[in-house]
Length: 187
View 1 (tube, one colour):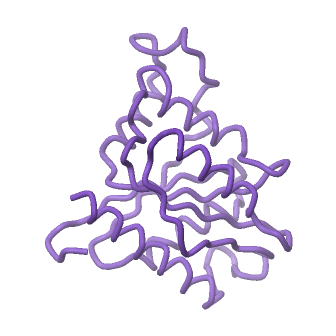
View 2: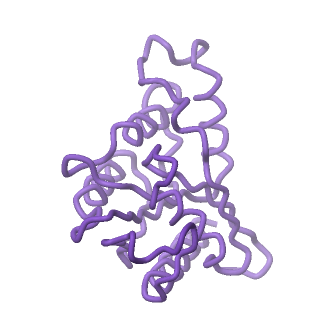
């Protein structure tokens, strides 16, 4: 990453839970980011209504317009997702639909995106991350492929809001370095 350029990353948690491990993981990422990378965590996913093309364009809800503007202004996205029913949580898929359909059209095209996930189970968010990567093929995004950050048994890796597991910290650092490199490729 060039020393002069800063990288602005928008973090999006696929979980609405107040005590979400994925939201905690995003917040912890800020302290693990490379020099010059700023991570702003999007906090209004619950306010994004279900996608309906009748309500797009001039009729787009203000919450959607605000979300689109934040994505447009970000150099990259960092998504932390849980896994529900072997796939992506509905609220996260809905948000992606607003960004990639209708007037959201091409907001994700060429956008560097890193994916990670945390879960209290032993298998983590493997299938949800795979499903997200498939979606990003269609949106023509630039996903980071490795390292994969799959935080299984997440309750053992946090002390309150603090990520205390050194192995997980190292993986997140490496993911963010890869994301920074992907952003630099596009500059």
